[in-house]
Image 1 (tube, helix red, strand yellow):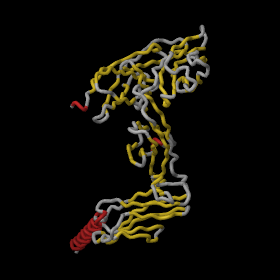
Image 2 (cartoon, one colour; image 1 turned 60 degrees about the vertical axis):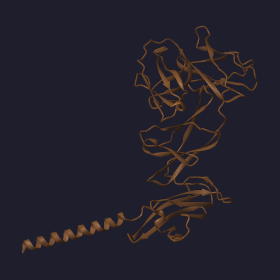
Image 3 (cartoon, one colour; image 1 turned 60 degrees about the horizontal axis):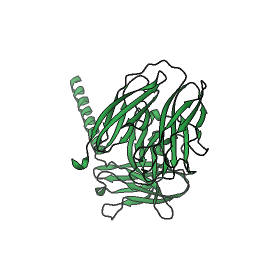
Image 4 (cartoon, one colour; image 1 turned 45 degrees about the horizontal axis):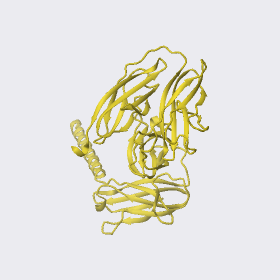
Length: 410
């Protein structure tokens, strides 16, 4: 009798397992629904902002379904559990729904029930119109530009917001995803815009506390690449034994033009402009003891984006001790764009690495996670890293020669 009871229990358990597997198989056969949406202009129904969490007031929103086997799947649109549209297989359908929404919070869903998925499945998102979600992270980024020797402007967008070390987010340009960033990865996007124009640069994220998502965007106006920037440099003169210094800009074409501006910086801090004419009069400033990267930014009518030239200045006595430099050059795909990565040497995370190509300054970076991007022309080039610290005031340099082939001749 005991053996019979054990056999009956075993059979019952087997039936439960088989039934459970059949249920799981049914769920596995359900379509994987998904959709995206963005706000439309109320007059022309044109896309103006590809964001999910939109804090503007009432307006039209367009919802577009996109999932595997969509043309073979019938489904329905719901707003707050109310049916608003159906997409039947035999219909001449567009796989989208457009609706006008007053300020408020809405749950938007698509639902599908098929012979393989008789219990049905749904996919939902939250739309907030004129209502913000305090649990969403306050995204932010800053924009930096470097004018290369070719006159082309290199853009760097640096994300900086609370909780960045725990949040994954994406970079978008004019609504297109161009790069993902996860915790522990680089927090910046380097981008070369191929054509002049106005571009919308955004970072977007969704979190468990902010399922509807949030974004931060800036408009970037890109002008024509300018090869008419002047060749600039300057000399530094100390006043006696004081901490006062004069910066003498070298003469260049247009230096006396009233529309030309000369801006001076020390470790990225603005010092002032050379307002006196002619502009080649010295600029005077006082500095504390330490090391400073002194930079001159010149803007002219023919070079509105500006041209930068920098020089390291050590104020006060130091003990000379220079690190052993190393760096790597990494090609970006099949293009002539390369990234310069400084090695893991002493002080690399604390001081500026200055980069030169064929003895011409092309930009600076700080740390191993902040490489410099440079676009080469075909030919032989010498790439040099100059590194200066308070213990190495004269600086130390390391150079590598690189051959860049012409893709047209390959």
